[in-house]
Image (tube, rainbow, N blue to C red; front, side, top):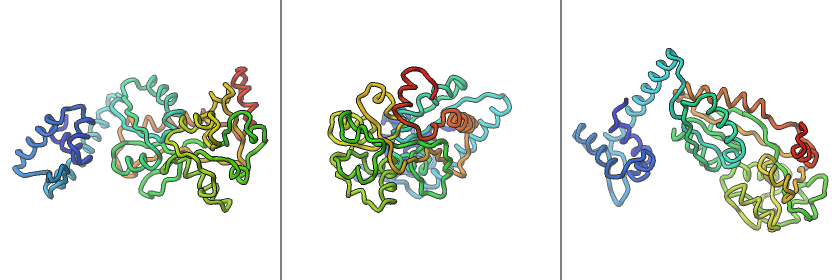
Length: 319
């Protein structure tokens, strides 16, 4: 096992916080401080500067952090090599997903993965797309799954499936029985949108921009931080919105929401995001391959009549 003191130091250095490191490592803060001080005594130098309740790495600390990265990567590579010999697939994977994917796509996928690989423990972090990309960039997670374009060219972005977005309105709304909702129609009603940094919001903004319409042209009445909050506000008659078709199947079955296809239709990719150069655990490769196959098998069908699709789900017919 790699030196525990070095692991604790590496976590503190990455987060620049003894408190956050203690939470991540499931240790008390005094225990974390003790481990770091032991390492400082071994090197006979300070590794952190502590001023005004903030910490920063000293020059020696930067050197230890740089070598710690290499040590842990080599350790993971050694573990993988042994597992290749023994056929063992185990370990811990840290993955992150934007809200829509984490709530509606990953539970079933990870459940099936766990059945096949019971010795792999998956830790899932949930944030908006910007937050997940930031975690991948900082090596806080091994794999991200996001719902918007990724600008960082140093990351691998691999599309796993397409997602269809639709307009959602409460029953009885003037748009509820329309065959499609045009961009012009959206401008007539109060609009509920996701928060800044959300992949859904970014995709909608790009879609409107392609029609020469700015987001500020919408009658935005609320900004909310999750698909569930958006759906609840629409059900309460506070406005209309655009959301993933995958998030509203329950509400369509219950009749609490109506979905109206957009004209022109709007789709976006769900994508895997990971570091190009980062060494990957064998468990990570297995998860990626499993997820690729899962997404192929559960790819959404082409643009369908939503009422017909829901009827098929209710009656048990294939759709």
